[in-house]
Image (cartoon, rainbow, N blue to C red; front, side, top):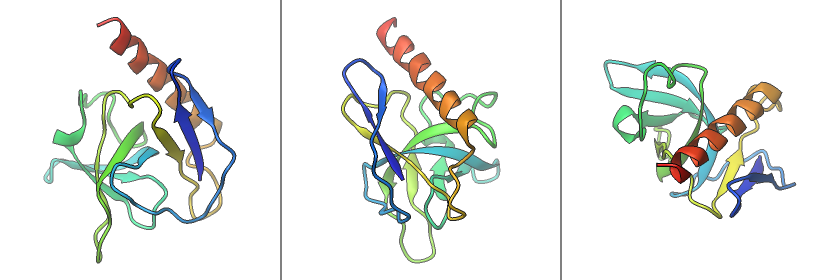
Length: 137
């Protein structure tokens, strides 16, 4: 896992630590990918690098847009409730990540990053767009 730090300039710095385990602690932030949206549950299942997908209710996605938030889309999520028993963690997706918060980049169990360089570029574009929206609203 590669943590990233959102600094005061609304940029993301990659830190050089890696681990194959993800400890799901409430309020931890992760760069993730929407794996599946389940309309009947009004929720999405999100791959953030843990053993099980996280559960993300649509109501917990700030500024939900079905055109943007679809399977395969990059998203930054925070742990609301840690994984327990046979259930994955419950997540939320804030519109803007608070300054100084570490956003962790998952490494999948195959040893590969989520989706390669495109995933990183897309995430950076999303962060810059959100920062611009936050500054100019």
